[in-house]
Image (cartoon, rainbow, N blue to C red):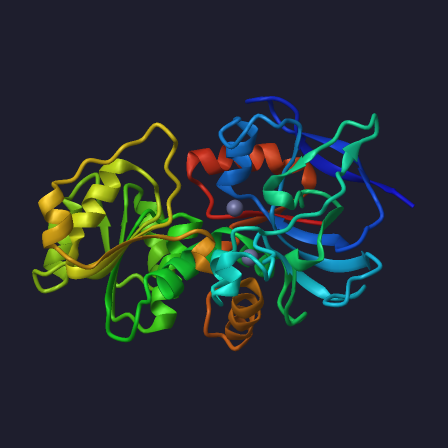
Length: 361
Ligand SMILES: [Zn+2]
Ligand SMILES: [Zn+2]
């Protein structure tokens, strides 16, 4: 029988979010209902509220979540009620041309639940990134549930569901950072600090954090930054060259998504180095670079979607590293809040005072 629970809704562009009663259908074939235990507040939720993603209001926000599977559809065998899971937005299809090539991390046909969650008047909701986890329970595709070791606290585990995974993966999967590499990261929010953490775990020996906010640069040190640059006060490209023997970094990660920052990232890397774009640009932005430099500097210009992660491979591995004390995930949790505090958390995010506010249910 359908259930009624509380969830955070963005009703119209730019309007403050509200907590409403949400109707969750029973899981159909291929679906699961998950009881949410924690969900981080990500910039993407704010972008949805501002109409920056699409116009399919109302949105059920929240997508960086961990919880317990409550019930599954008739044909679901991968997860069962009681399983502790992180929700992902890359439930791979297994049959598209990328999956068939064995590169499921690029799957072009990922799954979400087929049924819709609704308001009590029947209005259908668009779940943020097909998840919608600022909610006591949510309906997802069973493939969006990735089982991990239940010893990891939900407020920490959930963060791997989006931003922190995007950052770690940008370094480990896309940038292929290796032992002894030099890495520079532009932008030290949740994604950028994830990239710093990923670079540290991968064995980078020089990790340079770049931001405009001294507080954020302090946080970056906790995750493993060996050098910091305030790009408002210093020339970031020049300083990165200085910290890397005059050469530039082997891997430069752009975690902001601005053309002027990308250009700095492009010139801050060593010859034959790699630039990874994990920050998300808006549709109006354009970049202009001397074409001869694109050719002449060699190397690779890559984009990283969700850290090129494969949830079934990466989530359990990263949770194991966390439980062994080898991955700092605790440092990302600035505060834990309730469902009623999401709007206030958006304001704190805009002011830059937090890394992650995490709703705990
Ligand atoms: Zn696929
Ligand atoms: Zn996110």
